[in-house]
Image (cartoon, rainbow, N blue to C red; front, side):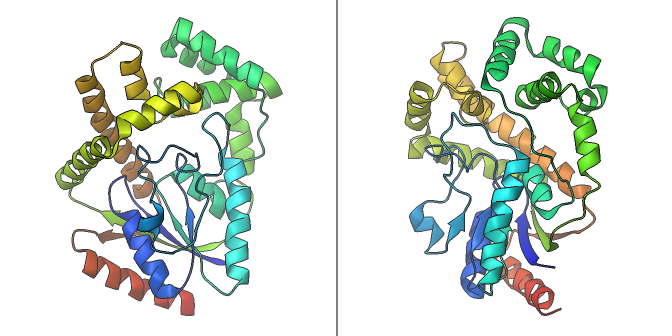
Length: 307
C-alpha cells in the first residue's frame, strides 16, 4: 500500500513551512489538501504559498480552478490520488499538507465520497432562495429531507447545507445516505499524520497577526478583483472574502470586516482541532520550536518510510 506523509493542523499553525522543509530534506513533492487554495487568484486570503515560499519544491493541487467553478471532496480524491500515485511511482513518498479534513480523509479513503451530481441551475436557484429566505429556513428544509445531514451541519454553513439540498433534489436520495454507503470502501493509503499544536491563546494570536499581514499584503485589493470578476458562491463562502464582500455591499464597515475575518478564522481553527482530536491515527507535535518540530517529524517519517 502506498504511503503518505500528512502534515495537518489548524489554520496558521505552520503546516506549509514544515511541509516544505521536510520535502526538501526528503527530496519529495507536496500535495495541497486545502479546499480554497485550489482556486486561482485567491492567494492572499487563503495563505497560498508563493513561488518564492515554495522554495523550488513541486506543489500539486494549487490553482487548478477559477473561483466560479464547483469542486467536491469526491473529485479531490480522484485528482489528488493521481498526483500521489505519480509521485510514488517516481520513488518518492508524497507529503500531503493542509487543513481541510474532508479532503484529506477522502483522499486516504477513511471517508469516501461517491461522485456527486452537479447542476448549476439548481444551485443558483438554491442560493437565490437562501438570499431571500435566510439560512435558517434552508437548514429547516434540509432537516425535513435529510435530518442526519441537518444535525451534522451548522445552520450558518450555507455552502454545505445547500449542497446537501442540491444532492437530494437531483438524486432523490439524502446526501447522508450516500456518505454512509461510501464509508464502507476500503482505504487507499497507509499514512503518517503529524498535527501541529499550539496553546490556544498563542494560536489565536498567530491568526490575528496573519489577518493583519494579509491586509498589508493587499487582501482588500485581491478581494475587490474577485468580487468583480467572479460573483460565485465559492468565493462568497470563503473566510477572508465573504466578509469583505459584505463590506463592498455596504452591509458592514471595513473595520468590522477585518474583525469578522479574524473571528471566523479562529472559529475555523477550533473546528479543525475538534476534527483532528477525533482521529486516533494523529500524532500531535508541539509546534512552538520550529527546529525541534522539524527534527522530531523527520525522525518519525524516517521510521515510517523504512517500516
